[in-house]
Image: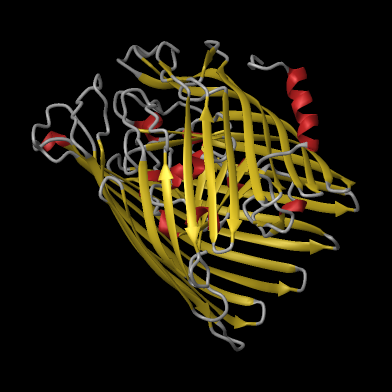
Length: 609
């Protein structure tokens, strides 16, 4: 492992962090769903997890989900311009297509690229985000190599609550959203949550001088969305419901030979699900869900017929999850049927999965074991995982886990004419990690070392070994290795948080660093409350990276400072003022693609805290 600091220095940092911890860590009372597919106290979760709460999302201002994720430990992003353009999210150094993304339990993403359309995810619809680091293929199947990111929208409970916000900022940015949430009483209680939002911005040039198709004009975007959820208790312990989210994004970009043509993409992200939960026996809870997600992307680069392209992918998924309590332990049995379709390729892929997980708690000991088999056109893939945690008392806990994972070849890698090979096999991963967590005496700490070895990595080659011009094929091996430190504390009236990541995401076949991933990145934050005012600062720091796999194009490191303040002038009404990239830093996350300079945003909010 070729870290800029030695193993001994990292170990010393780990020990010192217990005494002087500073950074984002889990609060013991936080409930986490994604790590085990069932609600569980964060203190009882073995997996490395981060939760982004509603307050942090609300004060993030206009922008995108990727902007929030960029401020979290273990996460880096690359984007081809403003918030509406194509975005990649890397977790623990894993490729963007090695991360599973869920919206309220519904899997989203393109079957052609294997990545989620982050530019189409509406920020105003989100209530909280859970990030689980490391392999979770035993729970979620293909692609969960680097981790799982689950986005939750608001759910209704209690008396009706109305929320809303309007905002404006730099680059002619406008934003507005509204929602209503609540539930009725009685034996057949109905809970409901509905929301809608709109945002637009003139943006900035998506490309810089030197880029192919560079145009100095502004490239803006518009996004509108609606979401809803209704559930009804049909009997004690029995509930049925439905949910949906629809988001449409129009985003401009630069392209060669476009003239005065409005070069843009139209992206649609739609999800819908119906579900039923039944308490069949006092110790047996069953959940059945049928879900559908659509990822539609149209690209229009010039006025000729060849300048228009449309790629639509669909996923239909049926899952049946059973949680059986055996004393203090829990046995989980899962069946999952998933059908992926790409209309332009006239290709379909069906995957049937069977999984079992067992969790136990005995005094100071925590144990999780799980196994899964996925059967599809790429054959049967068997994955397994085991985790152990020990509570030393006084808030100190140690964890250790191992797990295997895989990524299924995308439809492009299998079927795209002149590029895909139907013989491509899944990529495979094998992860080991240990962690130390401390929560007490006003300090929180989360420290993790991980080592994830990947084989059969799919790469693009020109020319292809089979004689064609180019192709994707299995050839590479890679290692994702690193230390992650995170914690938080309070000094007088100031809340302090920070995270530090040292990692070595490398291609073992070539010995080079994986593209667009730094070896060091960090986040720092502080906030202070004085009466009705709450003010804070956020600093994101990243080391240098390479823009290409050959490591010939270097992207310089950068640091971004953001400031914000909120004024709660009544219990329901508040004003947010935010200044991003205060130093007007000129930086890149992808070569010759633009990033935002100094911007401001202000919003008036009702019912949002």
